[in-house]
Every structure is written in C-alpha cells, then in structure tokens.
Length: 357
Length: 276
Image (cartoon, rainbow over all chains, first blue to last red):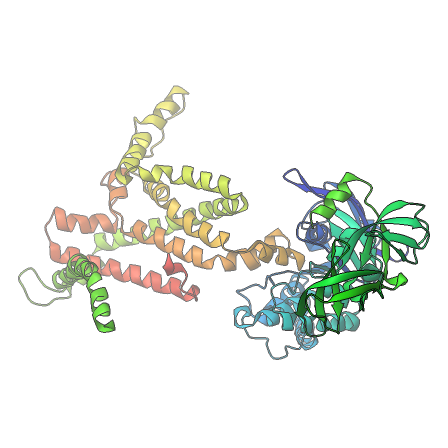
C-alpha cells in the first residue's frame, strides 16, 4: 500500500456491451510519470477517464491515497486533466481560462494574479494574459491547457494524448517541456498515448495495454529490451518476431538453425516466440553468420539503412549503417543476449490480441 | 474572358435583385412616402406622432409587455428542452425534434383556431371542467390567451437556435469545467450560458419580433377586444383606410424592432446570432 497514490482494483468497463476494460489492476506511485500506451481501442483513455471521474467503472474500485473515490464526482477530485483537443473556454481570455478553477475555489484576487503569472512563466507564455484562445497556435493552446490544470496544484495531472494534434517537431519539443515541468512541480503525471516514442522518452513507467488487458508494466528500458510477449515487442519499436523451439536452456532453434541465447527455464523442446530487434541483426559475409540470406530491399533512413533480407524462408528486418546492395548474398548473426525468448500465448484471448496488430 | 464570365454570373443574380426591388424596396419606399405625407399631400410628422395618441400608445405598450412575457416564457421553456436534446443520442434527439416540429407543418392559422376552440367559454376545456363539476374558467379573450398563443406558435423558433448552438459545444469543454472544480451549477453559469449567447440572441430575435408585430393571434384569441399595435395598424389599412397613419405607426414599430436588435447585437460580439 504505502507509497501507492492511486490504486485501480478489478476495474471492468463496457460500452454498449463491448468490454473495454476487463478486471484491470494497476497502481500508481507518488511522483511517478506513468504512461498508458497502446493502440486505439485498447482501453487506455477509458482508464484515464475513470481516474479523472468522467466514467464510472461497472465493477471495481478506484483508491486515492487508500480512500475509495469510485463514486466521487470529477469536480471533487484532487486531480486535473489536460484534454486532447485542449478544451480551452473559447469565451474567456487566457488569464480567465487559467483562473477558472481558482475562482471556483474562491481564492483571493492577488493569489489568482500571482498564480496566473507563475503558471504562464512555467509554460513559457508570459504576457499572453489578455489574448483569446483562438488567437493562439495549437502548441500554445496546449501549453495554456497545461497551465490551467497545474495552477490548481493537483496531486495528479492526467494527460490524454495532449500532443496528438501537434506536428512532429513541436511534439518533440513539448516532450522535453513536459519532462521539465514534471521535474519542476514534482507531481504525478498519468499520460495516455499511442505513440511509443513519446512513451519511451518521457516515462518512468510504461503500461502497455491492448484490448482491455495490461500486457506489460515496466521501465522504458525493460519494455523495449525485454518485451514479455509478441504484442509488446511488435508495438514497441520494429522487431522480427519468429516461431522458435527452445531445445534446452540457452539454446533455441529458429528457422531450422540452432542459435545460442541467454534465456533459461523454459523446459525442453518448448515452442516459443522469439524477438530480435532489427538493429541487433548483424550482416556478415556469406557463410560467416548463423544463416545465409539475400537482400531484397534497401531504404535509406538517415541514421541507418533499413534492409529486408530473405533467409530460411523468413523476411528479416535489418538496420545497419552499412549498406548492402539488393541481391547481395549475406550472412546473418545475432549476439546471444540480443535474442529475446517469450512464452507463446496460453489462452485464445491473448492470441486474438496478437492477431489484431 | 473572365469579364464575360463575371457578367454572366451577375446576370444570375438578376431575378433576386428584381424580387428584392419589387417586394422589399418598393413597399418600404411606399410606407415611407405614406408615413411622411398627409392624405391631402404635403410633408408631415403627424402620422409618426400618432403613436402618442392614447389608444395607440396603449396598444404599443401592451404589445411590448406581451411579447416580452412571451419571449421570457419561451426562453425558460426552450433552454431545458435544448439541454435535454443535446444530452440525447443523435437518433433520439432528432425524433424529439421531429415530434416537436410536427405541428409546425400545420397551418399557423389553423393551429391558433384550434386554441380558440379549446379556450372558448363553451369550448373543450370548459366542457371538461363542467363535467367534473368545476366552475368554468374565463380563458378566451384575455391577455393570457394571447401570450399562450404566442408561446405555442413561437417556441420552436427559440428551441432550434439554442439546440444548434448547444450541440456545437464540444463535450470536453464541459468536462474541463467539471475537472477544474465546477459543479453542475457553476458549469451552467460560467460555461454553458456564456457559450450559448449567440443562440439565446437568435432565439430572442426570432420570438420577440414576430410576437411584437402579430395581429392574427390577438385577433383570434383576443376576440378583437384586446388591441395590440399590429391590430391597430391592420385596422388603419383595412377598416379606416387611413394608409398614412398606418404607415406612420409601421415606421414606429420598425424603429422598435431595429432598436431591439441593435441592443441584442451588443451582447453578440461574434455576430453569430444573426447568422441563423
């Protein structure tokens, strides 16, 4: 219990008979940057809305500091939300927008004025007090939306795909902004996105969700390097996902070739899923790697070349700074600790989750 | 080439210009000519000043009173209805709107006549009252009956602009208000009402102006005993054949209409209300 700020206990929710969340359990620690990551329809936004008080779960409880707030209306909760499309009040100036929550709480005029100033400085928009929301760019509006939320000193800030409507360059800038803000004000951020890069950049903890189930919870490094199942591996970054057979501890057979790996404890001759990141496949001269293949396509990506190599009947995705011509015969080699072994999905449910991607 | 095209395009506007000239500008000019001239000829302000005569002034003030009352009642009835419509799903909302608008397909005169039959001293309502041994109520030929007729006829014109403006507000705006600590009351006062101002303005204009100028409703439900300014003007044209005073009073009424719209414009900064 101790350091849990929010606990979701056995939360289920369905809309029009469609199950969106299925007995979900999740806890969020104080001062953590948690990202709910997944494709659209995975239940991440619904989870956020349940925490924010905009949806009531069909079953289960929401605890805040250990107290049950499941039935507490949104306006009584100690958290604030940054909405995807900003949701600034179009009839109010920037200053009035920011002051909205403080005026409701009957704060003094001086307090409100100082807070507006402070929050505008925090989001780098000093001097915008008297502008109207529609005279601001999308990025500026989103900053105001953030200022309007944090000015109320919430314990938790909920962010629902706040960067979704911004262009790529601005999105990257805002990611650093958000990290800075988080460190400066020191509160818990719960962030919803379908963008894996955003999640990897900003989060302390990533919760990967799909079809109402949590697929994996972990640090960005753990999620990227040690995905627990094929869905996570495929959703986070590019990857080669292959069927393999775990011959014995530290030895796996992929596409008829036995390769050394570092995983153990799967048993003997057990079918498994194998994930190999494209940057972990090394291309060598023919005959020098674990298997031979032919390059079928090359694309220049800036930092590296992305190649497809046909080997043992599988189309490998390979990223390398060295270019190999289409049609070139190459060898493929993978370091043992870059081979990630995962259990095959046990239930039909989890299998369906995979096929959906 | 482009000159010829734009000339052709201008030609397309021809019928409308002819229409406007014949049926708007010419009659308007005629009203002004009649309004500012004496029957014997010669310019005069007497027709305009006729509004100061006791019975004309009484009719104008009564018109203002009843049309304001009608507008307020319409607003109070329409706002909750528009809110309910907004919170409904698309399909059920359009069903309610359909049922609501259904009577409007019936002729306006027939609907008002129906009220006459309901409200008459020996009408449907009094028959029912007598049947249950209750005393008869005096309903027809009262100011209340006229206001009832106005509200009945003009309510849809208040509901539709309000519904339009409310459905345009994104749900997340209301959620943002709740998120920032506003309960339903404060959300309504601080967000819903200010954002629906264009609809309120539009609705007020569309109810107040026809209510102010009506003479049919007061004729049918007021029994010719309660005269509104519309009835006075009508009589000048059709009974006493004094087109000059009738035009003069029309000009006064026009000033009131334009004046009230100008006042409303102050509240409607974006000019959205007049767009409907």
